[in-house]
Image (spheres, rainbow, N blue to C red):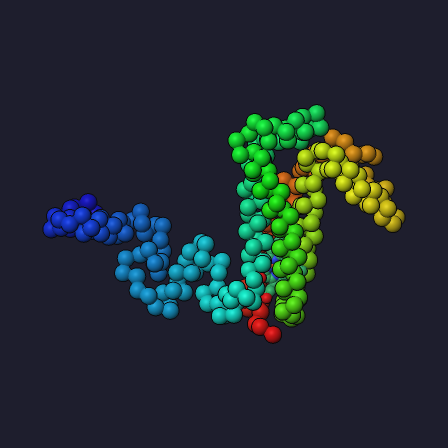
Length: 263
Ligand code: HEM
């Protein structure tokens, strides 16, 4: 391959031609071919045709999540308002800002409030990232509700999308649970009393009220067991479950024939 490249480069003087020849050589090599399958837009000699466009989508790890063709109305902003996409974006953003916060947060009652104050006073961009996380959480609850309203308003819950509506209801509940479990983590007066009210509501459930409250609190009153329980739910258990349910939700959008048509 090196001699082939040398031969090619020999006759060329212009820097652009040299770069092009170098790039062509690279694309003919095994290294390039091992990464890009035949039909990829990155392969040499790619020609734009409907068939090749389909190959591009099918052969890319990222693109293959999308359909080869979409209906025109499906990408019309005025139809979906991109509210589902916005909710998903906020979830990703919350994950990234949440990971940042985890570096500075210890879920132990003796130190947690101190960590929260330290985030504002001694961590670079700490206050900014904390506020971005908080505001995005509020926005996600609003956007998921608006997305659900759009789906309802356009009648998109009707067959064949009724199962995806149910998946959506699970997503709505998970989003609310994520927001509520995060509420306790600052361990300030607002957090502690809000969770006291929430768990008291659980206590009032019929028949199993005592058990519900015990499971939520990790005891009979709010304390360090409650904090570690809610922390684990907030940073691990619920994000794990919601990620899987979101994947099912997206997969169903495609299997149900893409975005529904206008009324
Ligand atoms: C974490 C929460 C959620 C995320 C990330 C999400 C994401 C999405 C996305 C990206 C779409 C594609 C169309 C669009 O952007 O509007 C969609 C469609 C859909 N979503 Fe959601 N969604 C969520 C919650 C919900 C909820 C709460 C419901 C209803 C209870 C729901 C029901 C549906 C249905 C039925 C469709 C198909 C709509 C159509 O074909 O027009 N989703 N979702």
